[in-house]
Figure 1 (cartoon, helix red, strand yellow):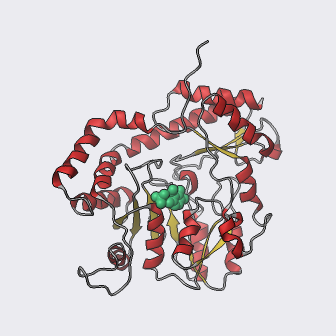
Figure 2: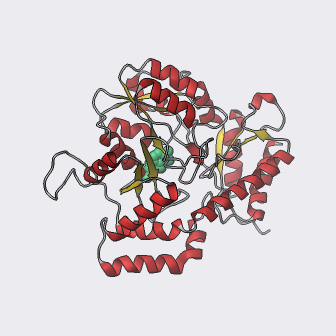
Figure 3: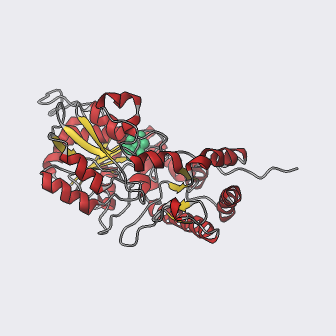
Length: 390
Ligand SMILES: Cc1ncc(COP(=O)(O)O)c(C=O)c1O
């Protein structure tokens, strides 16, 4: 009996196969130059990304995590300061608040978008006497409610820092580019991102020339001029090999976003046909026990770094196991909200504190959504899910 080929969660080999001559030439160019740290390739990438994102200043750094650290350092945030972020995100969002010496203040998420809930954020901000910044995340590639969060930031007189690690090219309800709205935007080029390098890489964006200058100094140990230090920075430089790879890939980014959106729409249609509804309707509302991601209306844009479904908690892990058996890749982003992580126990949050995040951690599952997926592969994944949940 022949076994159907599997569908991986992500297939970077398919992307490399398409771009191999261009990528290999870009890498060879850097190797020939023997210039590996910052330099012309990084300068060019920063210019090109600034244009793409519509921001005056884009500063490359070593990772998305470092982008958060550098943003906090540029704002002089540290000991005794509080930074508000969602509890449902990748660890770095809060981990690097702590790394900067500050204290994360968690808030719950909106169950429709999985992004920071402005009501919960307002409550949390109300209890944070030393609040110095808001750090919303554009989770899975969809913008948080930036207008509401800008209003909250303004009412407290604190800056907004956007964790746009998963959201390059995403747009908010007003059509504004992720990372171009707050005082600072933080991006990651981790290989699984829509724009991913051949290793780690990150970027900080800002419209403020003073902050941009500070970031450029902070990423080289606070050195300016060379070997003279008015501040203590970090070693967080983007390397030329990453920049060369990212410059090639940037030319294809819009086409990849479009392919991901097409794939998302194909899943949506297939799940809808089975009776499923979008995440705008809770699972208790009945119907087929699956909620596909709520797609925001234009001018907002979801870039589908992840396509995340919601299913009843008691069936989620069995569904995942059944898909694994059929060699269909899935992932749980994220199984433990940050307020319940052991390393943050000292902050005093207890289970039940943020019910939407805790529920999402039990009910969500990310499916393959990468641009090179074929219609047949999407059908294979959707059919396996619908058959299991039926
Ligand atoms: C929301 C979020 N924040 C921060 C990061 C950190 O980025 P990096 O892995 O490049 O350090 C990531 C990426 O993994 C992320 O998804």
